[in-house]
Length: 240
Image (cartoon, rainbow, N blue to C red; front, side, top):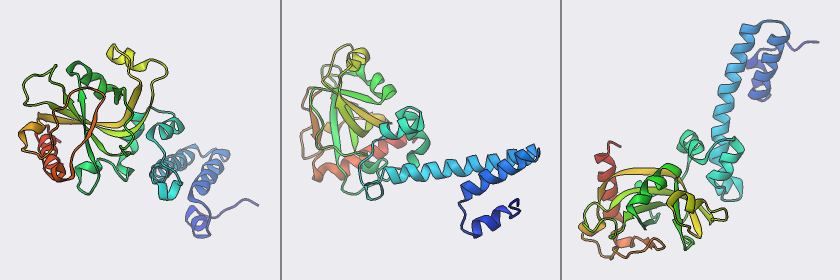
């Protein structure tokens, strides 16, 4: 006997709404009620999209997933790029832009050649000969143009990456991106656009003018709040 219950009745009876929507779509299709089938399919797609967002959030939360799942793994499951996955589902990210909203999350400074910045922003990658062993997902990596590229000390912080993971560059991608090879690639989930500013102008306790693209320098706890405020001003200055 055909199931004549409404969608609401099925859900109230404990049936999965996704299954109920699929059954409705199939019933309308078999009955040649194609407009009603389209409506049921649309509702199923919308609900599946919401459910996918929730699944992404849970996968990114170790308390639920039992592991620290990177955006690259999620992107592969979704069949899209890391950047597209983050842009579509990043609002669910528990640590999204963690360093921008306060708390004890670390902020880091990376030195970069001026000519390398565009590729960092476009491809959400940074080349390094040293792995960022202490950086956690969601933490902010300030990109500081090195003195060889910008002798003027003002305006050297030109953007930031939100750290996702790092891996050895085994296929020479860094050489393709920047014209020279690096041992490791840092992968980011987002590029944060900033109006340029300089750490040297903030009167900080730490010295952050060390050169070399391989160093990942932690912003000292006593400087963190002042740097956060500078980042927020730089974001507002860029229309964020």
